[in-house]
Length: 315
Ligand code: XMP
Image (tube, rainbow, N blue to C red; front, top):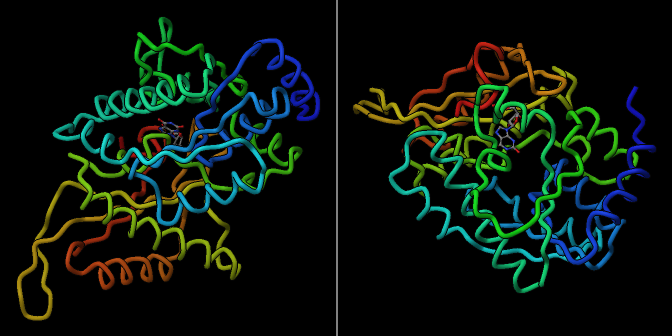
């Protein structure tokens, strides 16, 4: 049986031993990285710098929210705008594995230059068990390279420390509750962010479409859960497909994008079942996406596949 208090106590001691000097932590604002950040900050105080990278691939309002949270938690932190660099790294890339590797590399190069300035030699990451299990190793086949594992370049200058490596999501949430951090119930969001929710080449215009669609899906499902119409799914988002299809707008032909809505229930992300979202909620989502984004999107579909055989994200 997992004991969050014991884990916290042991990990603070371990982190103090493992990090004699300065360290930086890649903090995305998600539960994994925030928990790792708070643990290490309790262990080494101001010898830790938390770095939030604005990749240009984050959700609506996310950068400002994370900035506010970091300030509130009182952790030494820096917000870096690297969106041009990420879009340049992704230009022309279609293959999901190449996307993940390019993103991993862009993150590490950003961390390396910040670490040099801060004179840090350790990099902390909030990697959890499913991340490395699915990224594969000599015993396991790669399902997908989680950007914080399989996407790391081989010539990295920093020593990697991963305090949550052996934990599953439900255990991380238990630790988050014991630490009293404000993100314990946040839905998971992948490190490569909206880049893996745009099928095909990632360009600012498509990221902006999927960002708006994700915001609608999140708002409608959260509202439905608040009203007690359904239980909030474990994870819920939109994916922009690289297919265009024919539609009608007024009396004119339209040729627009398709958005897939995904909502799943899971415990540890290793398996998941698609959520049975009531039809009237799906109606609202479809209506809002196709009316508020009618210049770009003319078709909305609901993904009714579980994991396996699918994965939660599409890439
Ligand atoms: P999949 O798509 O493999 O996702 O079923 C399992 C869970 O992990 C999230 N995910 C990631 N998280 N880095 C992360 O930190 C990644 O590269 C990554 N890829 C997927 C996904 O959102 C789901 O919660």
